[in-house]
Image (spheres, rainbow, N blue to C red):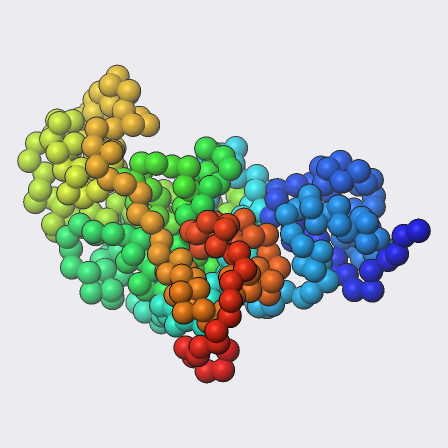
Amino acid sequence: MTHELPAFHPQRLTEARVAEGLTMAALAAKVGLSPQAVSAYENGTRTPTAEALSQLARALGTSIAYFKEERPFPVIAESAVFFRSTASARTRRNQEKRKQQATWAYEISAWLDRFVALPEFSGATFWRTDIADGFATPQEHTEESIEEVAMMLRSAWSMGTGPIPDLVALLESHGIRVIRQSSGSGKLDAFSRIVNARPMIFLSSDKEAGARSRFDAAHELGHLLLHPHLSMDEVSNPQILKQIETEANLFAGAFLMPESSFSREIHGVTLGAFLAMKPRWKLSAQAIIRRCFNLGAIDGVQYQRLCVDISARGMRRNEPYDDQIPPEEPSVLRRAWELLVEHRVVSRHQIADELLLPPNFIASTMGVAPESFETGNIINLEFRGQC
């Protein structure tokens, strides 16, 4: 005998399925149901039995309670998802998957922020009128205007013009949430999204080259700053996509390597000379060479010759000094969790119990081991208000 559940929220099933990157047919095959049944559950015309819901929860890595509760932190406004990836990774399904994962990550951040004062984000500083006015509509921007915007942000953040010691730490200090977790695919380097006016950048932990990961983060920062107005449909348009990818790359180069300081350190136009700049600027030789070309420090012939030299030496994926520039690790969410656990403000399993998200996803978002959610004793302390 089967029993239907008294409470079931269809959209939660859709969210969990989308976060796993599964079609209805693929999920149905995993749990031994028909695609029609899964579709009926998601559109609310049928309620799954307890047995069916148990199978769905196991397949999606959630608890049964996840499907019985509303989202704990309402999402009011969201942006398009920006990808730094191969073209094959920019499918609609992958966009929806990353969109949902960004929403989940926002919920984790919001939950932690109930107890610990995380760095706040100032939209008034980031999207300043003098910066945003030139970027109100999808249009082609000049290299000069993007250079100016990059310098405006450096000025707003009181950064000076030298190399950035730790880009991830800088972004986190200004309230941008940075998450490094496995993308499950070598085709996706990074993506970003704005959720409830909170910019979020996701970097792939599958990418071991820290120099390239820094450029990925700056590239996504460019999207968040220059393209918050774009819709998912616009981002999916090949012509617009090509344009905004070029703009984000230009921004990353200008933000990471300001002309006023970077150009003074160019002391040769050989591959060896550019490699020598790599440890100080913590960027790939390829990014440095491209920046030199954009600044006019080398011409098109020299640029092409250097690209050929890089390919001939097998340096497209791995360069000298890569081992000296480890990936920068986010710390804000991890440190917040460790603080709560250390002072026993919450029990170790409380975040999973209250958010009802897959524990492995919570752990990877915060940068901690799944074992961090093992049960511990509770001693209630108060950091902010009455928690």
